[in-house]
Length: 118
Image (cartoon, rainbow, N blue to C red; front, side, top):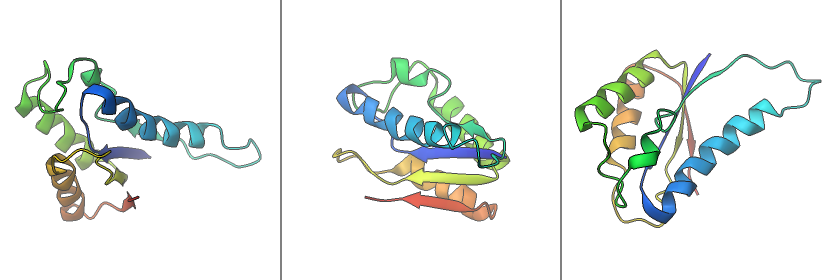
């Protein structure tokens, strides 16, 4: 099963928050008690590529060209069996444009969505 972790990405002090919720989900599943049978999951995370290492403070620029990011994220959504999306902006004012696109791609392809909203 492939699970895509969609959500806000920004640089600066909030980058850790963008990474942390994704890490918590993966760790929670990985640390599930041995008495439970676990289904193998391939986590598709836009920050797995190391993109977070060179993202600008406002979260809008990195060393990866914007079109390459969009194509990579689209492909990840396209091959996913489930999308987990966090709608938290971590106090930032910039809208969730990329996340909304990922949600619409998943909706169009009828991929189940689990939404986290605080």
